[in-house]
Amino acid sequence: MQASPKVSPFLWFDGRSKDAAEFYVSVFPNSRILSVSVISEGPANGQAIVEFELDGQEFGAVDGGPMYSFTPAISFVIACDSQEEIDYYWDRLSEGGEPGRCGWLEDKFGLSWQVTPSMLPDLMEGNASKVTEALLAMDKIDIETLRRAAESG
Image (cartoon, rainbow, N blue to C red; front, top):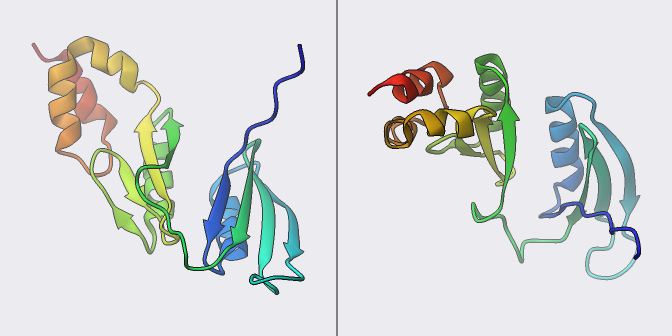
């Protein structure tokens, strides 16, 4: 059997792939720009293809033009171990973007993120209906409120 192929996200931007990659690399630790290539022919002539890494996960990005845009149907989940991590990622990624419900947000490039506590599955086991009710009332997630909901009878 052959080795599994490597799967990584590839993002389409309208002329802002390098700006987006630089922003994401500034937000996530252990991240870096791997390469920036200029497209030398065709309708995207002069635009960029960027490869970058966010904490070990490789991404690609292209300046593909205005034909396509992001929707919340695709999002990236950031599983946070503390309220401080939730606050940090929520604050940084929502700068210039739009906060959403239940830990979702859209960043300034239109990409959707879910900033959630890593212990959410455990909290749901405690009292799924109360935790869900509390979650649905939040934009940025508050772990302590979810813990209290999980412990309520």
